Each structure stands twice: as structure tokens, then as C-alpha cells.
Length: 540
Image 1: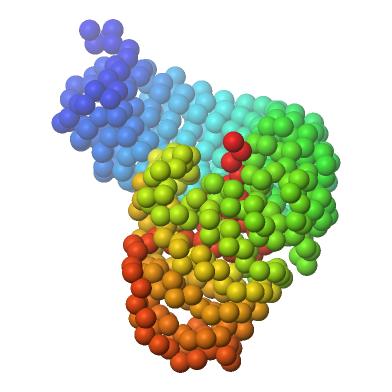
Image 2: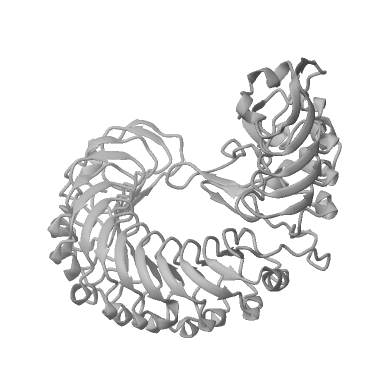
């Protein structure tokens, strides 16, 4: 029996207790899968998502061991490497999402048939050892989210000629991307995001014809994107170079990547107009152009209305000093314009940011008619359902939780040139996100400062009992400042710069339980995911 057992597979069987040490005597065992159980104790292979802790044990008798998956546990100590000497057929090692520390053991280089090495999300330090690059059978190399450092040595890297995935994101690597990267003919995914890398993107990157993913965001890359000929990369699906210092315009060669689904160029120094050719990217689902110096917003909006699959779209922080067009030809599912009346038809709008612009005109009362600003009762009777508004919020390595609890809630119309009176309807706002999909309890703020608003402060604002900040300073508001309710909590600075405003008088209105969330911020953005403002565009 000892020599006959080659595989034991008991995943997600609700197993409890410890694993018998006798398993270590199965000399022919090549695959052991006990993942997704509630086992305790110590065992080094195929125990993904259990509750193992402590240092990694040495089981050197498993000479037939080929696959070891100890990911998503709480192992500590040094990265294991004993199997390279004891198991000549060892091919797959996954110890990601643990607490291993120290350097990468040079002994891993002696695993002559090692194809997959995953050790991301640990506490590893130091450089990539020279010996690692003698494991020439490697196809998948991942050390993302550790504390590794050093530069990428092109002469060593090209020894891994079979490499298909290189994931070193979330470390402290520095220096340039080596020109020799093009000699990795099988490379499909290049992930060097969140490092300290510098220099220009090598022109040879355009020769990696198998690439499907290029993720270089959050580095210090400079230069012009035209240096890379993207037209050859017909398989490219993701190109993300956000949060760098790249300059110039978007090269036309990007628009020849017809399979592109995600294009991230935000937070660079790019300029120019958005090309009509972006409409050729029929599969494009995510476009991020925020915080550059792109121009001609009218042209951009007409171009982007043909990109029906975009979700999200980030174009804030561009088109400076330009006038937002009032063009009804623009798809009503794409809410642009100087707060037009038809904005009330945007049934899925829950976050709107227009502050710090030079917008003029009146604040339309129709803004208060949007479905997501209605009361819970009104929402319950409408056709909107929770799943229509679900957005992923990541918590931990991979689990996704569908929730709105991470979204901020505020209304900011500040620093514009709005005129006219504050709409009375603003006091009717009782909820932005219905309780069935949110249960938000974040106290937020309403900022109407630094405009040219006139009229009186609507007493109905006192119904918003969750309003924690209110600022209407530097306008032309007149009449009496209400007291009672939330108004008793606002400081005088909220009202300065309105010479026609008089002393407060007491008033108490009927109360509503509210969850209030609107915002108007830098340019025009709808939606927010994690720490970014983005435009959620739902066609339907």
C-alpha cells in the first residue's frame, strides 16, 4: 500500500483535527490536497486555506513530491527549499499569502524542473539570488507584495527563457526595465507595479508579442510612450502605466491593440486630444485618463459615447478652463453638461463631483429628483434593485465583498460660479443609497461655498439630521439663519461672506432618518472605487 498511493485528494470535506504523521511515510505520494478544511497542526503540501501556523516542517521522505501548495495559511520562518534536493520531480511551489520572512533561499535554483514558484504576499527581503536564475524551467515567477529590492539584471533574467508570468509588483525594485526583456519570447504577463523603477520604457517591449498584461503603475517611469510600438502586441488586454511621469501624447499604435480591455494612463504628464481611433477598441471596458492635460472635452465626449462597454471611465483632472458642453446628443446614460435638467434621468447616479471648476448658472431643482436621492420607501417601490449597483470592494488577498459601506457621503458644490437660489427641493433629500444595499451611517457634509447663490436658506435643510458639516460662506444668501437641529452644530464660519444674512431664529421641522451622499469635485466624476473617483457608466 505504501508504494501504491500516489495521490490523496480530500478538498472541502469538513475535515477537522490534525493530519496523521503517517502520511510522511507515503514515499510515492506526489499530490496531496486537503484544502478548504479545518485541519490543525503542521503539514507542508496542498493545505491551502486551512489554519496552519508555525514554521514549515521538514518532510524529506517525499521523493515523489511534485506539487506543494501551502498558500493562504500563517506559516512563518524561512521559505522552504528542502524539496529541491529530496524530490527531483518537484515542479510547483505555492506558498503565497503566508508570513515567511528572510531572503529567498539560493537552493531554489537547484529545482531543475520547477515550473511554478509563487511566494507573493509574504515578508521576504533582500535581492533575487543569482542561483534562482538557474531554474531555467520556470514559467511562472511571482514574488509580489514583499520587501525585495535591487535592480533587474537583464543578463540573468533572459536565462529564464520559458518564463510566461513575471510578477514582482509591490516591492522596492529600482532601476530600468532591461532592454533584453524582449528576448523572453513566451512572456505573457509583466507585472512590475508599485516599485521604485525609473527610466524610459524600453522600445524592445514592443517585441514581446505574446504579452497580454503590462502593469507598470505606481513607479517613476519617464519619457514618451511612442518609444514602444504597441501595434505588434495584438494579444494585449491590459496596459496600465498610471501614476508615473510619462509625457507626450497617446500613441496611435495603442489603438491597434484590438483586444485591449483595460487602458490606464492616469496621473502622468500626457496631453493632446483623445483620438477618434479609441472607438476601434471595441472590447475596452476600463479607461483611466485622469489627472493629465488632455484637451477638447466636447470632442472627447462625442468620441467616448461610442465606447458602450466602458465601466469605469476616469477622465477627471483634464480639460482645464474648458466649457462643459450642453449637448443632448450625448447619451443620457453619460451625464455630462452644466448640470442639465435631464440629469434626473440618470437612475444609477450615486456619486457626483463637480467642485473646483468655473461652472455657472443655477443649480437645477431636477437634481433633487434623481432616484438614488429618494427616500427608502420611494426606492422600494421603484424598479431599481440592489445588484444593479454592486461594486467590488477588496478585503484581503482575493475575497470580494459587495458593499457600499466603504463609500464616502457628501455634497460639494463649492468653488464655482453658480447663481440663483438654493432649490427648495434640496430639503427633500432623505437617502442617497437605499438601506437594502448600503446601511451607510457616515456623517458627511454639504458645501455650497464660494459661489453667487442668492435667496434664503431652506428651513427644510433641518430635516437632514445626519448632516455633519455645512458651508454656505461667500455667497449672496439673505434672510434668517435657522436654529435647532443640525444648525446648532455649525460654526459661524459656515455663513460668513453673506452680508444680508441675519441672526439665527429657532425652528424645528419634522425629522427624517437620512443617509446623505452626494459630491461635486474636481471636473466631473461619477462613482468611487476604493481611493479613486471614477465614473460608473451603466447602459441599459
